[in-house]
Amino acid sequence: MDSTAIRMDHLTRDFDGVRAVDHVSLDVPTGRIFGFLGPNAAGKTTTIRLLLGLLEPSSGRAEVLGFDTRIDSGAIRQRCGALLEHTGLYERLTAEDNLEYHARIYRIDAAERRRRIEQLLKGIGLWDRRRENVGKWSRGMKQKLAVARALLHRPELIFLDEPTAGLDPIAAAALREDLMKLASGEGVTVFLTTHNLAEAEKICSLVGVIRRGALLAVGSPAELRNRSGGQTAELVGRGASDALLSDLRRQPGVRGVEHRDGRLRIDLEPGAELAPLVTRAVAAGMQVEEARRGLESLEEAFLALVDEADEEERG
Image 1 (cartoon, rainbow, N blue to C red):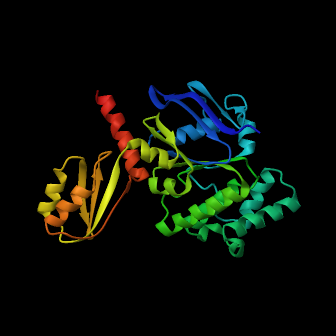
Image 2 (image 1 turned 45 degrees about the vertical axis):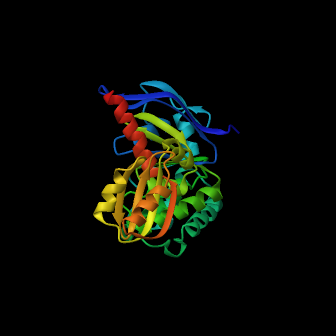
């Protein structure tokens, strides 16, 4: 089996003179959870539609599971699962009947249908509610069922477009956990779009950043954090005055300072030292109980990449 599940080569798509996807070249290895990150209207959903063969590229090409999206879209969709903008569930049917219906579409035989439906519903914790009409369910439960439906025919690759959008934090966390368990247990490759950077950092082993249709960077979350070069520091304690904050902001190597809930968060330039800042804080009367430093979050690295691209455009 090819170790590359998705290969894009200068993939481009225009809509009435507007470029939605701009010469994207990217390989997604088999068996990974890949996060495609970007703000709304960045080109994430259009990219998925191109990869599923639902749209023709304006130029460039893509292969999914070894099939050319321009000529083998049927073979691609047979081997892939997808959850796009809507769940696609029939709300008057029970959870079990929804999966039964889709299993028949994929021509899964009766014995395998029963085994597969039970396996998936138990895997997402909905087996005991399988005979309830899904119209009465919460959005989080419906999303879980939709993910299970996308895995019903044992796809090699699954596309999930903003799967936790609109969910409350508890439901989103539960869906992420179920997604990781199902993906691991099924051994499928996952192509996940999101603008939730914290979510991507938790579940993705590889991420790509897209902005206005152009791919800015690809790597593991740690690689993207390192690439931005920035670091953060945090001072925990009491007595941080406004004068201290102003003083710290003026120090060499300090990008910014925020004070919240007894914590000073300091954004540092690469190579900036923390010790002199702690000394200044203590001298200014702050009772420092703890000082620590670390790399930027993925969200901060993402914003740095976008800011860098904006500056290049302004020239």
